[in-house]
Amino acid sequence: MNYTELTKLIKTESQTDESDFGKATDRIKKALFSLNKKQLLPLVKEIGAIPENIDHDSTEEKLYAKTTDIILAKCFHELGLHADITKERANCADIIVKSPIHGYALVGDAKAFRLSRTAKNQKDFKVKSMVDWRGDNDYAVLVCPYYQYPKSNSQIYGQALDGNICLLGWEHFAYFLEYDIQETRKLSLAFVWNLSAELSKSITISNKDKNNSFHVLGNEAICKHLGLIQLH
Image (cartoon, rainbow, N blue to C red):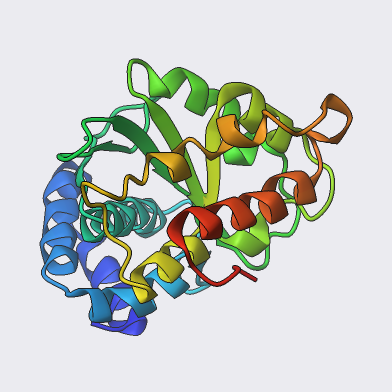
């Protein structure tokens, strides 16, 4: 399945009755979870940009958003974790993830934006909400296109550091898949999900809202932990 085929599937499934939204979601999940890592990778690289042929404020846009959750859950599976997608509930994280080896748990939230929408604010990222949604889980991970994060200063970086919310891009997960990263007894990925707590140990208050303080230092720390080439 390529990205064009996926969007066609979303459009087809969106034609079902609103009451069958859950069943449509399950059918898309079944299709995506049947893919192997090589087949998944191109979708991970493209899912973060909502195409303009997906109507605004429509059932198909809602289903597209749910599809991003499914793909993120599938990514976690490929990393050796267990991931479940929450049902239709407001004010909660979209994904619950557990490590069968190291025993930690995290919540995940996937984001996609239209390329035509350039004006975004901190409410679009819901970093503060993630703090509440984490609940009793150990970590919270927000995933959106890397290039959609604010380029310079933004309160979301300070909020992420203060609340220990890990801000990652779809590009990070594509990178993990390409390098066949998988959790083992020797390699715990908890360091990645706990990245904000690690960064907050060295970032000063005056620098905590800066993009570079979060992403540049964060990428360096991830690559050092995983023994990979520096992310660009």
